Length: 299
Image 1 (cartoon, rainbow, N blue to C red):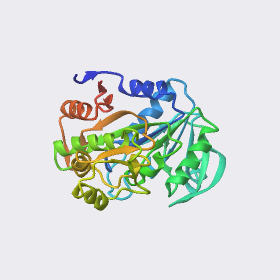
Image 2: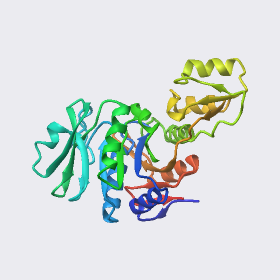
Image 3: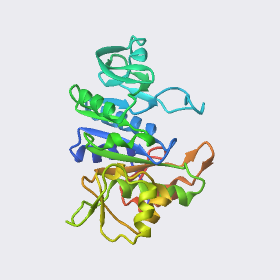
Image 4: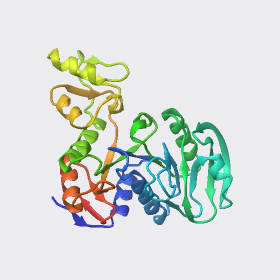
């Protein structure tokens, strides 16, 4: 298989719809992996298909420049009728937004408000501070929209544990080398799609499986299934994960539903050949994979 020309946003949205999901989250391999581009593309494709959407973030998205690095950020464009959740301080200052509710959940910029878009435009999102708060916001959004879209954060994968029906991975040029970036994508895909537990004598891990614990299990020659609640409970990734997973039988009580992956071949520090990166990530993750910049797919 190899990359082909496609209406990548529409195909990605169709995969999510076909899964029956009422919520979809974008989880990235690292910062600047294309999470916001992916979330924005989903918003655009679903709105073009007439789906009533609501969008929120587990971080801060839609601003003109990254508040940490100062680099340009992709914008979140929403049509009239869409719903968003963002900091009340941002929502109340925008006359194009109609506030529907102010929630108890809080983020770095204060309480979170739910608002309906009254004029199409680009909007800034600021989400709550914890994974449980993100899930409460998602449930509120589902009460006013057909589909809730969550732009995730690499350090808040815990919000994927409950209440998220489908996951789209975002793989970027975020590691020093091409091969390491591909391995990061493969590791995240495998980690979130662990096979279900199936042995009575399995070793069940309460809480997180730490790197130190995993190394100890390898050193002890552990051969039983190592069962975590789900892949977000594994506290390491990348090549470290791949090396340890090759020597441990890692399983999950509750496998997560990953439906696709996107690629972002450009980064402030490096750029990869777009088609080669798309092909490599698609082959490594074994997922339908899309380059939303080049409008190509691998499936």
